[in-house]
Image (tube, rainbow, N blue to C red):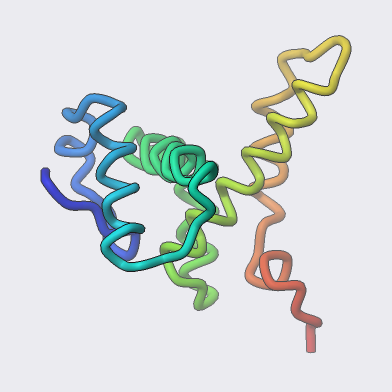
Length: 128
């Protein structure tokens, strides 16, 4: 695998065969080549979050797969769905880091938030 495109799901075995650093670099190269502006200091973090979500999809982590399928089924691009899932991950991680006694509930919190993730919650659209 020598290219990444967030609009196409990478073949799981090819993606997982890569070293984690190679995955992150492929994501960085995609954003660079697509001329998607990102602050220089945020490029690696952004790419790392993409890679984490793609890893979860590749290993068929069901709550993540279901959220991705639900969002794309609602008309969100796959790329934006990856961002939305990554945003949930960051919120949960921030909560864990700010907690004085982080517990095993972090994954439960992550999965619960993913279960509530919709196009409306991503874009703040009003139902109607």
